[in-house]
Length: 105
Image (tube, rainbow, N blue to C red):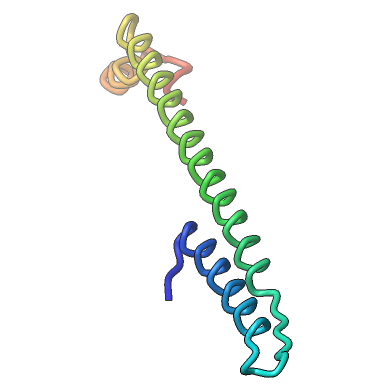
């Protein structure tokens, strides 16, 4: 059985009402009902909401990190093409052994 955040609160309320009904029933002769289930469900509901919030925040942080990496990579690419490309220098060195470059090592 899969419970959603509102479903747990509703279930906790129904269990509390059922317990109150059973204790107040004259036909049952003063039946005592004790359960911690409503409190447990309310606590789980709060923790589930907090967990979902943390998951959403983490997803946004990863998205921001990915965007920052993309921007930095794009800037590095523009800087490399603005001057001489290190890859081009290495190719020139391979074709001309006298043209040495530190970037190729």
